[in-house]
Structures are given as structure tokens and as C-alpha cells.
Length: 298
Image 1 (spheres, helix red, strand yellow):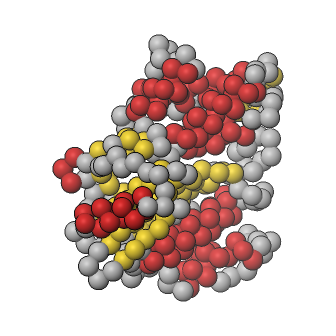
Image 2 (cartoon, rainbow, N blue to C red):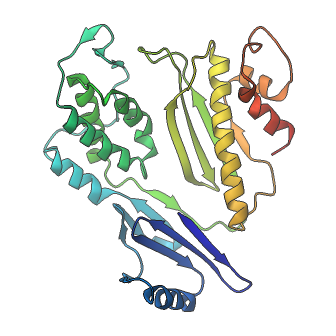
Image 3 (tube, rainbow, N blue to C red):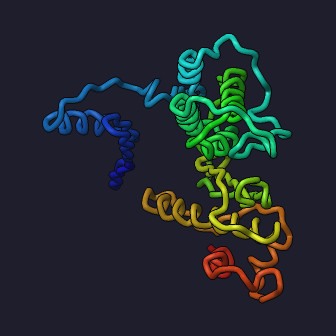
């Protein structure tokens, strides 16, 4: 949960993750008052400026904030006996297309599902600071019920990649101007071999810092690349509307429309033109949500 307290003289935000609390405020006096008053109701311990929280390492070089999971990655690698394995430079192999029975028409022997779920779950936690593995982890998470050797190999490759790049960080800088939201979105078409569903992915930046990302299969089967991109644009639109509302509450208002970068010309045309054609006459009403946002200049 995220709580906030904004007055004429101070701005404070409180992030709560189960029993861990992180307070950010521009008045140190309020931090002391908050600790004293909360301590009257609950038993708590103040650890000062945060350096490590919920598996994430926090640092503050040159007025910036960096977030990484170097220690967490090492702990996961130790748990799965991967510390001495060869490193790889990419989280996945492009030629490997995973299916329920293994890869394409080949079959692969089953592996321990409990250990596989534990591995994928650990990787999912790393996605919190590593958007570069979001797609690979999402694909591996589709086979939790009956994992096979090729699925485990793919998941271990992600861990090998993390060991190769353990110090990759998210970096957040203080902007001199009010930061603007910007979205980037892309999609594949019918590349899931089991369901023929498409996959979309998006990244949303506030200023030059990434704050939201996702890689996921479409909830429906789409009939063209344009439709796949259009559905993906709808998903990032919904996220951006939520982020704009949240930022407005936190008094970081977005006074200009949010730009979304999309590389499919047919998708862009459908978003800006209310036309019925053979390509879009079958689309559900909700898929035209992105068009309504464009018309509202939001």
C-alpha cells in the first residue's frame, strides 16, 4: 500500500509491504514525529536510511536513487546450486519455442514440479527490478502444472543471465522539470504454440526512469498483427490512466497528454480514425478504449 500526507510545508509518502515500512519525506522532523506516534501503538524498529528492503538494495549516488537485487540473485543462485555454472548473455534463446510437451513437436521428460515452481517464483520476484527478464519469466510461468526438462532448462538460463548481469540497476533521478509519463508498447502475433494467442509487452517511464512494465499473453485470440498491437495499446492505456490518477493524487499532475509509442501503422490508424473495415468490424467494444483516450486527448 502507498499512503501520503501533503501539507503546505511538507510532503510525505509511506510505502507498506506487509510489516516493512518505508517513509519518504522532505522534513526530517516529521520522520521523528511519525516514528514516535506509531511506536505508541506498535512495536517497531527504525533502521535509518534504507539500504536493503524486501530483497532490494538501495543506494544514493550523486543525488540519484538506484535499486538492484544483487544479493538476492546470489542467494537464489546458491539455493539452486548455480553459482559455478557458465554465464549467458541473454535471458532466453530465440530458437527455443516452449510448449506444454517441451519444444514444438518434441517431447521432454517431466521434472519435479515443486522445485520448478520454486525456481520460477524466485525469478518472478527478481522481475521487480529487472524488466529485461519479464518476458522470459512470464513464458516459463505458463508451465507450472506439468513442467518438463526443457522448461527447467529455460528457467535456469534466466538465472544464469542474472548471474552474468547481477549489478544491473534501476536508476531514478530528480528532474528539473515536472516529469512526464511516456509509454512504449509492442506485441507479437499468434506465437504461443499451445493456444495461438499473441503476447504483448509495455514499459512506462516517468521522465527518463521506468516505473511500470509487463509482458503477458493476450486474453483473447486476435486475427491480425494490427489487432494484436491494438489490444496491446489498450492494455498500456489502462495502466497509464491508473498512473495518471495516482500521480495526480500524489500532486505530480500530468498536465499534458501522455504519448504512447507504437510501431504498427494500422494500429495507429485505428486509434485515430473511427472507421469500420474488414479488419476491425469484429473487435469488441473494449478494444476501442484506446481510441476514446485519443479522442479525449488524455
